[in-house]
Length: 118
Image 1 (cartoon, rainbow, N blue to C red):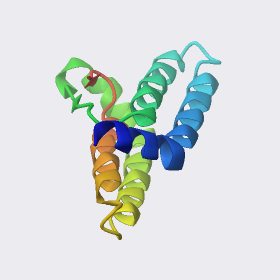
Image 2 (cartoon, one colour; image 1 turned 135 degrees about the vertical axis):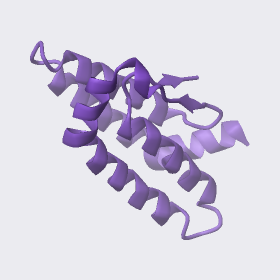
Image 3 (tube, one colour; image 1 turned 180 degrees about the vertical axis):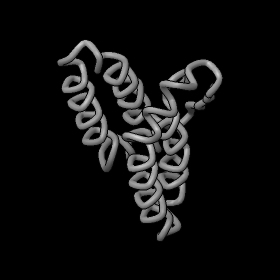
Image 4 (cartoon, rainbow, N blue to C red; image 1 turned 90 degrees about the vertical axis):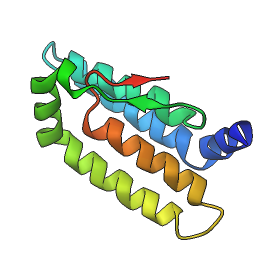
C-alpha cells in the first residue's frame, strides 16, 4: 500500500506541491536572512513528494523563536491550506489515505524548525 499510495500521491499532488515548495525555498534563499526559511521549505518539499511511510516528529524546544516567527508569518496560512486540502481529500472514501497525509503535513507546515522527517 505504501508504494501504491506514494505513486498515486506523486501523480495527483506530490509532484506539483514539491515543485512549489522547492521554488519557494529558492526564493527564500535569495537573501541571507531567508536561507533558514528556504532550508525548511526544502525539508517540506522532500516530505511532500513521497509522504507514505514517513513519520514527522516535531521538537518545538529546539528552535522556539524560529518556530514562533514561522508560525506567525507563514505557518498558520500553510496549515490552514493543508487542512482544507486534507478535508477535500477525505470527502471520498478512496481519498482518506491522502487526506491523512495532508493532516500529517500540517504539523510540519506549522512548526518546521527542529522537526525530523523519517
